[in-house]
Image: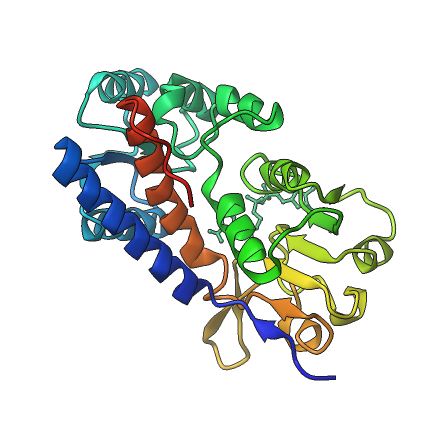
Length: 295
Ligand code: NAD
């Protein structure tokens, strides 16, 4: 059997960002509107600092305005909520993202619910969660949206396919399952208490791994020819003292069985920021009653 096709998220996300940049240019030219994304970072978590810097860079590259708000780790919850309120009211800001996790003294859910749902480009506000579940227009969480775009690019129509989503988080697993239901897949959500996970996974034409456990899903769990989307990003230690990024899927064995598979890194990862920019553009168009941007 030949190895699976590699689903290249770096190339796909690059094309998506080019499309977004041309829509942004059109919006500026025709309507004199520049979409704006505000990113708020509380504290000095090194990984979060890298994410925020990359988000800002990519935002500016597509021609949008980027507003960065870096607050000290001991910022009181009230001050953060006041900042969110001012961003909600700011007409130059069309999307608001508060980088998670926030420090422990701040209530994450309160922060999520403080963001105007129309500007909630992370898609975590209960209004957007509910709209997605009800099959209405919603701002959809970026990582599952990026995973869906890769799936559709690879498989075309998904209707009738059996999909297994491993992981039931609010950020990835649950919205991913909702998106697959919307595409008329038959969806199973597996989680930490699922019995006989290998046999559940073996039924699936589409496997979405969002667990956070390095290389847990083995090649002999995969149905031959299945499409595997590995959302996991795990850093593991190597015997020589170095580290390496791996997914939740054991790539070496899965690539021998699957029909197509995303690598880690270079699969779902780069799609997340591209979809954040897409959501900012969509949010901006909706706030100005402009025609819906479709991707
Ligand atoms: P999470 O910890 O919130 O959720 C993990 C889920 O996995 C839980 O629902 C849990 O029930 C399930 N689980 C745990 N152990 C299991 C087991 N043994 N068998 C079956 N299910 C099990 O994690 P998350 O935020 O959803 O992230 C999942 C992974 O995706 C992580 O590796 C994270 O780094 C990665 N991630 C990547 C991106 C990206 O941009 N590519 C974005 C978000 C998350």
